[in-house]
Length: 113
View 1: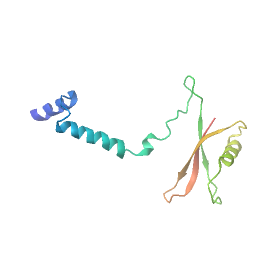
View 2: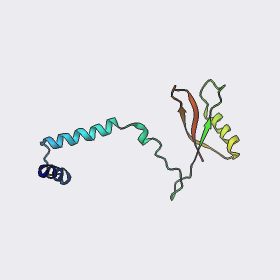
View 3: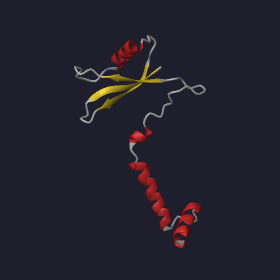
View 4: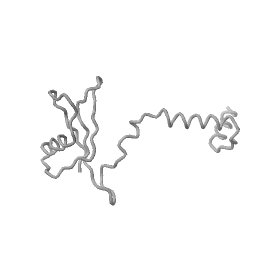
């Protein structure tokens, strides 16, 4: 039990040199985190509420009609958003298609101003 706490203490206070095996393990763990972390963890870093000088965004979900065969253009999405929200001044900032398990687009996540 004493060696476990000594090892844990040495990792916490980091007294290992760059040529030690512990340093190599830490570098491998950092690289694994960088390259193996799912991209979805870091998607949409834009804030949706106004803080200071930032512009307030609103997020809505726009369902896709079953009869639709292709992707919607930005102008079509903007018109549908205006129809749904009733806001004639709504402006689309970004869109992200949301797909089902089969890869078919079922909705669009839309950020509007």
